Image (cartoon, rainbow, N blue to C red; front, side, top):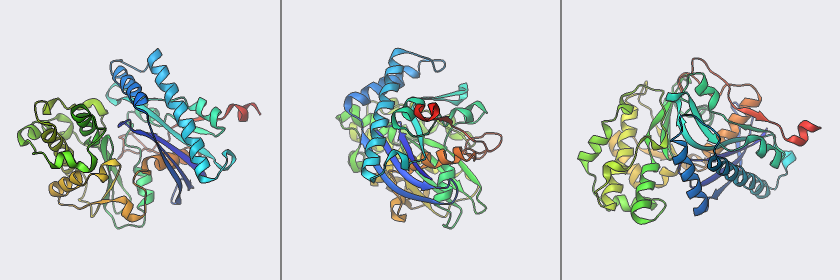
Length: 367
């Protein structure tokens, strides 16, 4: 099947749209990828919606949330159209879209997770069957609703020696451990780029710390770092997950811009090292995806604290920017085939389970 995956991460930098060919099992072939950045106005609107969502005791209708959801749907429709144009394909060539939407709040501790974006509207606008709301069923069953990528990581790494680990450095970091027998263990390790991006934007106006240059010019405040690591989340057993806003930049307030960036980058590295102690066995390799793999200072700090060499997945011929979007395309196909996308070792659900809500285009259902 040909499938499109759409991912808008917690960093609010834009939409990743990936097209793959897959059977939802061992066969995966990347076909095309496109990144579509958000405008400053769109980012501000989504950031405001996220802040608002976190004040709610449960997901509910609200004019600002509806407007943000419409923005997400509209921009994702355009991303699909541009991706198909780039690939030289038509709507009829694509079997399914995996639509993640935008996470505005993730509260499995309260029994809910909230991704905005209208799956039915996306299906109607594109004319393609759309699988959306991929996390809610897992949370309703008692799972964490995250991470969901481990089953895709297992497919990509099928030919590599195990045990190995895939580390995704997005707004939040998560790790997938794949054992020699195919066992999956996965969980969020802590903040990755999210806190650093917030700090750098507040202090310098830049969206992120390009090449880790600001952190490289600063000094890690070890006392603050130690205090940040004294958080109950890190002592919890896996599986576990975070909302991007569970941690803030408040601990580094008062530091200079460079020292704050250095300390927050070291925090990400230290939390990855801490995560390794929760794995069943030390991995032979640490493969790295997500935006953080472009930050050489972060990778150096991870190497120093873990004793493993972080290997950007691009060296294996994969597109590290596309992997999350590809993963949701893969999960959409698995959903069509009634195959599980979450597991006891990855989200904490009692048994392997399917997920996602299917939306057929209005024209198709009418015909």
